[in-house]
Amino acid sequence: LIIGIINTLFTFVAIKFIDQVGRRKLLLIGVTGMAICLVGVGVVFHFNLNSGFLLLLFILGFIASFASSLGPIPWVIISEIFPTKTRGIAMSFATFTLWIGVVLITQFTPVLLENAGGATTFWIFAFNAILLILFTYFRIPETKGKTLEEIEHYWKGNL
Image (cartoon, rainbow, N blue to C red):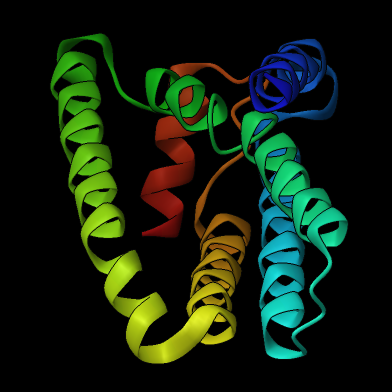
């Protein structure tokens, strides 16, 4: 129940702030929060803290960070950076890629937990979040208030 409440609440946070703060900045803030929470979960496992409260806090923080950033914002950005004639294909490809990622995470997380342990598993996830922060910072344009032509100009100058 609490997971659903946190997820819903922070999705509304994203909806409220996406046009005020900007897509890119909100994405950077949220993924940074995700990375911090994943490192925190790794620390709890590494030091055998046996703190259910601390673990719950980090997991709920991760869910809140995800729901306010990586959950909704990529779909908005995708809908804004692709022209109308290719937008459907781009959204289909993004959805397909998402589900490939879901399957990979679902299949490999138990294997990682068993063979590498909880700390290493969550630190690997945190490392991937850090890579996403860098990718977002260097490659994802801010689309708030920009026309498709302005966004296309960005891509021509930055590829």
